[in-house]
Length: 449
Ligand code: CAO
Image (tube, rainbow, N blue to C red; front, side, top):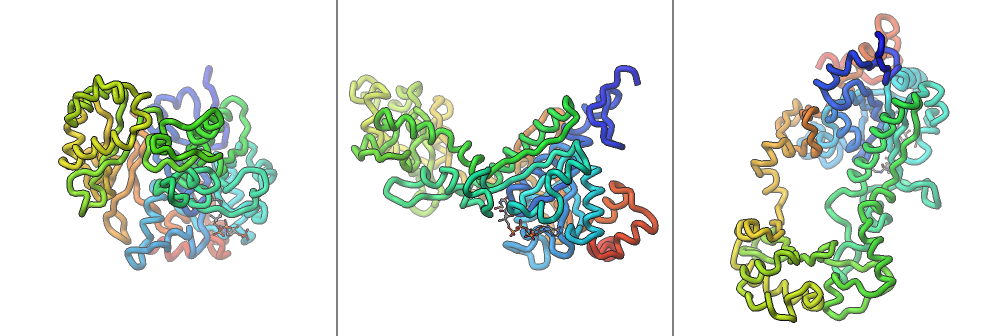
């Protein structure tokens, strides 16, 4: 067609100007096909996001075994765990023993048929399987190979890594917790899910670049790098420390000297506006009856009126942020006297109209029951044939032209026959040969279920 711009020359996967209308009506990543060779959390987080954005994600799993998380932290006997289901929505599952000769043949066809291969095996596993970068490029030069590893090149590059190891080696643990306590890990999965997010950005960027160059490339997101990126402000503070104490850290106001490295700052705000977690009504019995309260400079006068200290507005000891720096604990003690007389939601209701930044500490129970999160699809109820309905976090990124619907995770090998036939073109005797080889699991049994 005259003027047609081929942005994907892969056989059978042509997308041109004529298709643009159709693409615009569909999903952002329509026609992008992903070979999902990921397991546990970091890689699956990435491919799940891409699937929500419209990519066709085909998860390759070891026959009869699958992703280890299917059977970890099991709550419903016999059913895939929430650990697995909540990280693998909108995907198809094919069983392939990639160390079996026929399995290698099937994987090769899959590499030809896909745009991106995502993996987070231990360092060297892909090479040992016979599918290193050179081999992948030979099979499909347009392939983007995206990997999560614990570390980038360097002394630890061969190490296996899990979430908390990444939090510790990326600077999060040394800067989290209270000054007088040990390093702490955080509940947010910044090592796994955080790195998965980084990888997803690398993948869509590589796809975009491939439109111009026609070439695939390698994308690496190391968990240490991802965590360090999220701890950027702490490296900022490390350098500021060389110029003197970090005055916004409450230890400054308490007269505690600083050491050589960025210290743990408890619940101090990470920015220039002091913040603290304060008790609210009911804190004695409810572990989440707290509010995060920020004494933003612009709101200081209104805070003083609200807590019953109007005199602080003009008192030179309290009137300016600089004057208050050495009194942060005292100021928050006083504010807490006020927050303790109200529930965390009453504090929010009182502060919001006054533009005082604060936020209730919400429990997972409260979040799961929050109607507004249900309405936006951030919390979704999904039905599953083995386990029945369960709650999950939907796509946290909202595109106005690419709505993300959440589809339940696949059963192990649920789509083996479908992918072999529709995607890889196996049929008749060839299909039977592959199935009979034992390299792709028990296809008949799955189909009969
Ligand atoms: N067919 C045949 N073999 C398969 C297969 C398949 N479909 N899928 C995987 N395998 C094999 C791999 O080839 C590997 O074999 P070798 O050891 O012989 O090379 C083996 O299964 C195990 O892979 P692994 O070493 O990656 O798995 P593990 O459970 O021992 O380690 C983890 C898990 C996460 C520590 C490691 O994969 C890792 O460090 N990954 C990178 C960092 C990462 O993503 N961490 C986040 C994990 S989430 O907290």
